[in-house]
Amino acid sequence: MFRISLPLDPFFKVESEVATLAFVRAKTLIPVARVIAWDSNWDNDLGFEWILTEMIPGVPLWVFWRQVSWERKLALTEKIREDDCAASDRDGTSHGQDAGRKNVETAGSATAILPIRSLTDGSTAGDLTVGHMLRNDFLFESRIDLPANRGPFQSSLQWMRATVAIQLQWIDKGLSVLCSKQSFEHTEFDSDMEDEAPEMKELCHKMLGILPEIFNEEEDDGGFVLHHHDLNQANTLVHPETFEITGILDWEMACVVPEWTATKAPKFLDYIVFDWESEEPPHPPSYDEEKHQFAIEARDRWDYKQLRQHFDTALKRALLEFGHAPIVDLSMIETKQEVMRNIQDIAGNWEWTRRWLKKYQNGGVDPQSDSSSEDGSSDEAAEQ
Image (cartoon, rainbow, N blue to C red):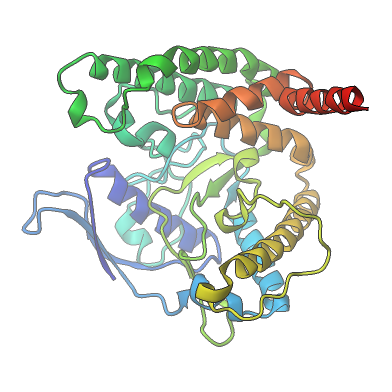
């Protein structure tokens, strides 16, 4: 497979993916492509950086998802959980980055450097060192041009503070752009931002205020995980008959993070709203989406709910088996993950961040739900 790469992070983006693939092949049993050749310099005849890898057999999981038996879906979920736990590094001391040219940007303060070209030939990978940061938090839209601290970070607290800091920089840049004659060139900044910016900046400072309550400077002793941030059904290849996983794609922005970051379901089981408690699965008349779209979606959501519960149970069991007792407090893990999501949402969905922050400060109880309930009770009493 031949792929060209846009210069998102020139040189390091391609070299990071090459090094990460070599590291995963050497250190785990996760099926990934073997790199045949690559060029991380755009100054070539093609005019782009590129990677040539072997073609992994299989088809994207989403193609056959509804044909897969329930038992096989449970097995696939378990297998993905096993692979997620496989790429771990419990000796790391810092985090936040992807793989670099002659190094894998692990969370560890590794110093040994191995030539990547020999790694792709199957030699044993050792500890590898840190390169550029390639997380969406620091790259999305024009953030890539901001002079931010992109790590490596010695603690989760440092990482979260840096994430808030780049949001503040992005807001200030937006205000500057809107006041200039170049505002039409930056479609990411709309006219509402002038009114919303004060609220967004206030939320940034409030989030900075609660970070020390949730994160500790010395907390990341539990180890680190090489995290695939986009593990979805399109990036998971399976055999078309047995549905065995044959390959995991798209490692270009994988990075090593504290375990609490990666201790969650894969992307296709994450961010799912389970708005009913039915124990029996819905049965669509057929899988003709033009005729029965809502019934099909209801069944899919029911399936995902059961699979998510299965994944969470299996994950907690695995953490206990591997002696990860310090991070088995799933409620604290969830709080940390919510903090990270809400920091990311400040720029796009700041109302949700404000609501979450009020809920957190109210001991986990949503003030809006309280007020709605109280209002409803008062209205009912008045009517009676």
